[in-house]
Image 1 (cartoon, rainbow, N blue to C red):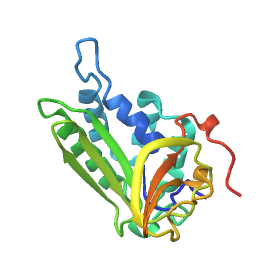
Image 2 (cartoon, rainbow, N blue to C red):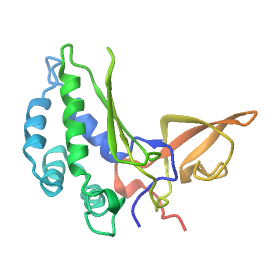
Image 3 (cartoon, rainbow, N blue to C red):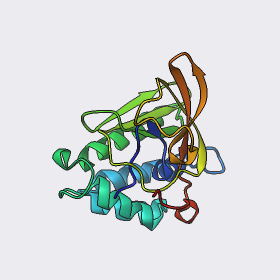
Image 4 (cartoon, rainbow, N blue to C red):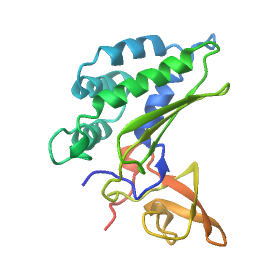
Length: 204
């Protein structure tokens, strides 16, 4: 089973690696990877080429590029959202738009997230004076297969303690309750570390 979400929002290890690459600066303080990055991803005609680039140049771990290949960009019936495939062109154009927006002078950092609460696959890109935010919106997925072992700086505020909102008794399964006020609950999201070897045991 793929590494899905119970619901809500997450940055995730692939976004952290890609954002770090796009936000890298040289000694003069200039974003030094963006021009080549845009040229490379714009030239890719399919997901396989893009994943090879992520593995060889951006240094996304092999387990993570395999996960993307098996679950996100799989156009058969065994990946996520087979009724919406292919989704690579949508995510490709969304990433291009986000990096282009981040390059508009004065250039700003890129910050990317995935939220699994939609009905379609789409990419929202916003720019402020401080950063560009890229949010990939998708339908839900099967439950994740690995426990979350890294506390993130992401919170969700929702009504109630219903399903698909994490497990308040085990933060490693997605989120931990930080505050309850009436029927409004603030959750702190837990995430996977960048290094696959540190991701902890599978969920039974």
